[in-house]
Image (cartoon, rainbow, N blue to C red; front, side, top):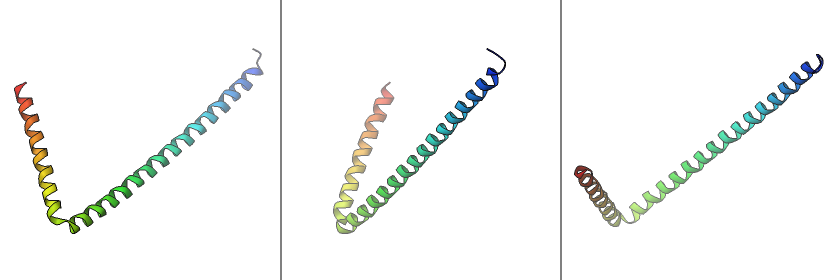
Length: 89
């Protein structure tokens, strides 16, 4: 390797590194934007489901209470089984 090719090689390597850094930065920004958009969609869906739930409760209050009670009883039953299983070990 002669003395004039070393600066040229170094410049080429620096140029490639700069290009790679720019590409990585661009990918990072696109990833962050995608996560933000996904989070926005999840928030909108949760808000919509919350509105739907409130409407259902207003339309069917007795059924809503019975469903909540059944869900609570089921959850307590599962927790009780898990607690009993854990205490045996």
